Image 1: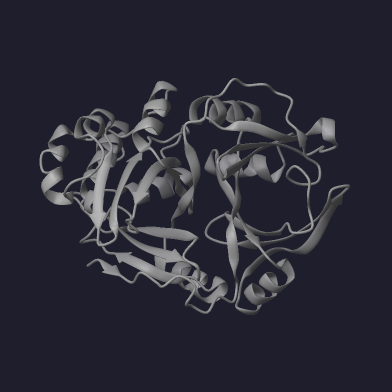
Image 2 (image 1 turned 60 degrees about the vertical axis):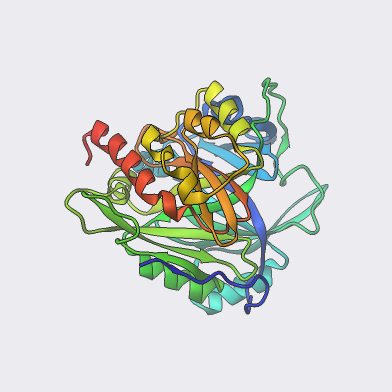
Length: 372
């Protein structure tokens, strides 16, 4: 059964205050091509570069930006580098969900005392523009959280990065921020407890296999959020069903737990999706029958129904308002990583009323791949 506990922002104990998601780092087999993909199809701008020309002998990274969204696209120069090992196992995927904090030493100490998985202790990186302090803790699978303190750094992005000289003609698609980052895991409760105990997150919503199921398969999910409610991490696990769930398919092809999708915020979803489709982004198809009862289910909305139907945009309403959302097909070769485009008009939920339609759309794609 669906259980909701929307938390009053700022009223919880927040022993590890997180200011925002600083960036997501993708490990890729070819960083330059992946950078072009994000720029040409999703409308990101190439901003900064770190590679051989800047003294980085082991890895290459491109920083791309749009609105408040920052992606670092990284690749390896040698086959025995950790990036190459990651890509061999998982394919291209999200390695790092970096979190900006006010005080890295304090944040790391708090997390460590509560049982954090330590990847790298606090350290400094410097250049002429100042100092960045960082520490790295582990989370599900091979995913990590870099804790980053920027208050004494005034450069472009980080030491070692220079302005990217590659000129790519891009038009913004209207993406302005990150709404949430979703993880697929084998054991949901283990990681729910980890975020509660180590990072002070609280459970916002719980969906069980009755909420998210079809005739064939099901999943369970808990949405974790930090003390301010600004950072939201839904965590999914497969549930028993007649056939293989989308989460199990992910775990098998990704070879473990990892980031399933990233929800990107837009303030005009119709315009954004039109731009993304024009650029070649593939989205899950929504049958026209979904829209037959939509007005009765969600009430009056500002958008034109014909636009939503034409673009396969989903709508849901909660007590706070409504939201519009759509999901891409996987953006990599394996059926793993995808994106969600979301516009919130007051609603704080995650499109619960769309779960069945979404799940069935994903199952149609699974069946085409021979994995259902």
